[in-house]
Length: 276
Ligand SMILES: O=C(O)c1cc(=O)[nH]c(=O)n1[C@@H]1O[C@H](COP(=O)(O)O)[C@@H](O)[C@H]1O
Image (cartoon, rainbow, N blue to C red; front, side, top):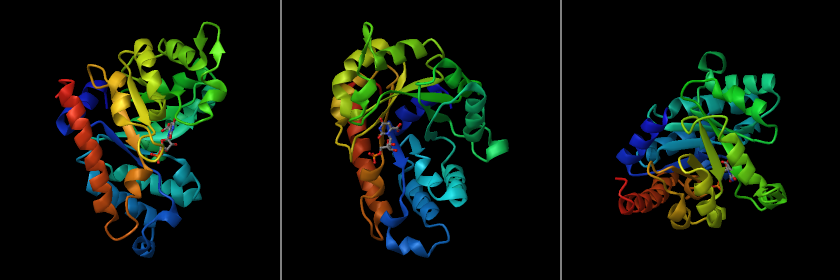
């Protein structure tokens, strides 16, 4: 999916919500355990209940890899169940020497080989340009590069002064030269709302993937104050607050209600910014 198509989806759905599909077997509603693949059933029902309210889904691969080959199959089937008009993010936080990154890119982008073709993959910038560029050799596929992450440990390296800039500022400035805003986004945690004004100055036209509302306590309104741009420019992710809204028979209904609350807030924000 390209940037224009993504913005079209945002306008149509009046939403820039991304739902994180991070399922853990022992947190699933008990009635799903009778299925051959309870996690797949959980994901399918969540997707069916929410796909009109969000523009993206982000399965974090850790939640599938931890179940071995079966988990990888669940990830593949989950990807297949996501309607075509939604943006898909393989949250795998990859990045390695060039020939290895090329194989990671194949794993997430080449359906013929792996059975999956996500629109994007999250990538760590630490190993530099040649570790990121193999992911950019696919048309309309995106790298979502970690810039300023939502966790406490982001202070350990990312906000350290490095010359005139903080390290995450250097990441944004330097990597902006590697790809256009049609192929690269940055991860900025919702818990770092105070950084969005600065980040928008450094990356005015990029989409930002913003995890950390809901369970991590980030504020949607605070993120949007400086985060929005003329093409919205934000995908705001929530996982646990939506997918575990209930652990009963009504889990999908309650997940929908949580997603709807966020979508309605997003609709107001987009309206106030005259983007819809
Ligand atoms: O790349 C990410 O998506 C990510 C980056 C970051 O800085 N913080 C962060 O929480 N994430 C991911 O976003 C999701 C957040 O989930 P919840 O906290 O349950 O909404 C998880 O899959 C995290 O791995």
